Length: 154
Image 1 (cartoon, rainbow, N blue to C red):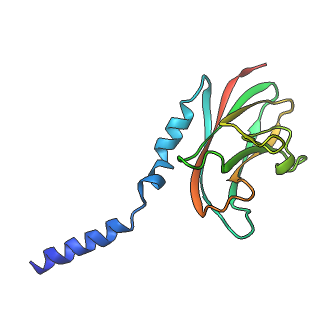
Image 2: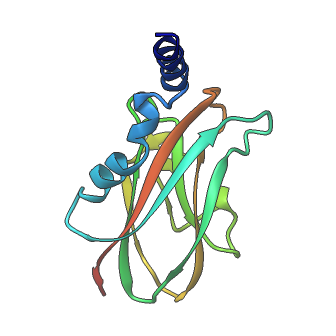
Image 3: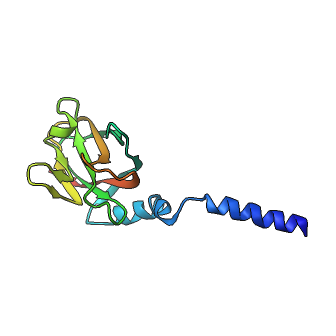
């Protein structure tokens, strides 16, 4: 009897510290949902957990190699309530992230947010994909998924 009570208490403690449903959705289900949007061929996903810091430099950056004359699509998926708080940006070593001419899910000039953007690569090479909180966002943490897909050749 004593072992049963201890087992029940231990199970309760363990399950109370497991990630909640919102974090679970940041994994494979969100990747699948985001990857199946649109008419394109899935190439890669960028799955990240964002945590706001005092420097507001929270985010993740990945390196990708893109080919000349290829048409790519970049999608961003976030949990409900974070649609206008997270940004996916494509840039290279010659153009800083905040002034990238290649594409972003946020237009700083107009204040518009987008779920996706297309990029036709003019020069083969290394590019960077970043996902981070938009400047001024004070939320503590969330997750986000970016999807890179191939639309076609030009």
